[in-house]
Image (cartoon, rainbow over all chains, first blue to last red; front, side):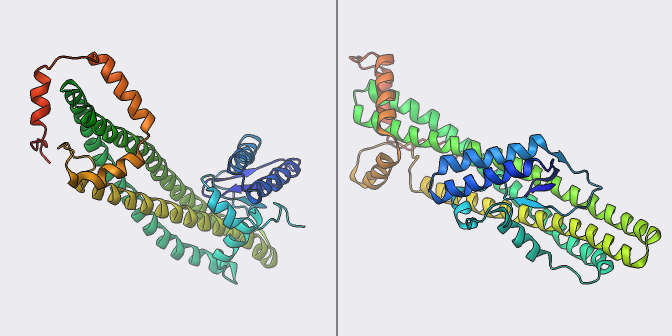
Length: 92
Length: 251
């Protein structure tokens, strides 16, 4: 699966990571809903690291649409609160 | 959450109906983006220079206020020493923020340049690929394949646009903060002309609120220890008294 970290890069990840990513995403949304800023930053950072370490950057000659787009790494807590609707990473 | 971002990006794409038009559309859009990125980088450089100038001024003030605190304490004016230390503390906090902002701006500047280069090479790739696809596939297949590649390029463009937007927002935020700092300087928050006259009350009150009292207490205790608490009047006393004359260097 192809994941883009907005404003950063696109990565190709093993499909097996989708479940873990979705789980982290749900927890991140829950942290925002619980108004827990520290937990939000920790979880969001974990998501970014999962993509960066497990994924391989797409080269410049690959023109692919992303399956998933993560928000920019410098996303603030306030922005996250505005952005998140409670839907998970992968829509039902 | 991520799905929300994705929906937004798709909306930004404004895809051409005919994928073969996408190349032309992409180039026109790319030229627009290129101008924006250039302007964005220039704005970042300007903001950075301004912050660096503020850093230099604050560094001078920190040294000066430290000297004044020593002079005041040596002269037995603990009240003046405290005021000087409060101002020093405030200036140091601002300096830390400025340091972080300069580092952040440098990263943003580099990030924008990288994104722009990536988009250029993706567009070039798209142009080449399109010709290859047209030569190798049937018309219907080529249509699908070119469309896929166009989506990839479109997403990259939308992402460069988003990166631009974020840099612009941040630079504006820093510019506003820099202006606020300059106003504060003009109002005398870092003025080296220390006195406890009534006219200074407003700034002093703000400084009391802004600076952490305990840090100032610690600094004061440290200074006292350095100078020896029952210090006898020294030449510094003369310096201390003279400090109500304006001695701003080159400002």
